[in-house]
Amino acid sequence: MVILGVDPGIAITGYGIVRYVGSSFRPLGFGCIRTEAKEHEADRLRTIHERLHELVEAYSPQAVAVEKLFFNRNVQSALSVGQARGVALLAAAHHRVPVYEYTPSAVKMGVTGQGRAPKSQVAYMVKVLLALDEAPTPDDVSDALAVALCHAFHGQTQQRQQQAMEGGAQ
Image 1 (tube, rainbow, N blue to C red):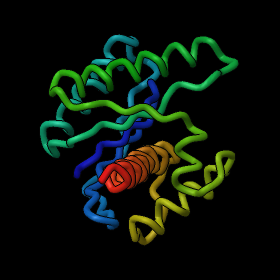
Image 2: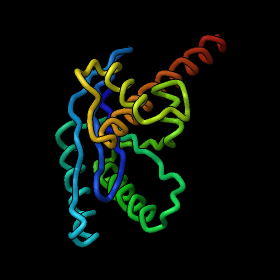
Image 3: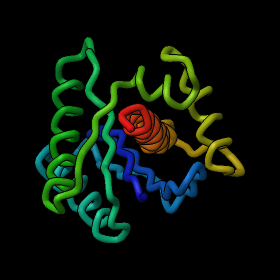
């Protein structure tokens, strides 16, 4: 299964594409989409959408995992992140790829086993789980890969639960 993980943001949207087979992971690509503050917000959102659209076309993921918006004291920042999330959802929907959403604490729990893990611990676990030489930077990229890994772990859990239920029904 190929999973596109997205950590949305108006200035930096992190992305990570992970191939998940059995219990092994392989990074297929990762990076970030940067937009300039001097650009009009609509143009920034178009850039994010176009780049995510290209990634979906290039990698044909079976799932897109997106970090959910969490409470933010800065309302303007929260709105911008929400808009970036919206264009990520639109890019997936355009290609009819299912979207799964995870809270930051669920991602941290899935990758590190601790829902309040610091970003450095998340980045370290991404590095270890994907056998990378170093943790991806900026944090948005590590976070996007962590979202993809979280979805893979979530799918493993669901698959085991389904198998247990089917086994118990026989």
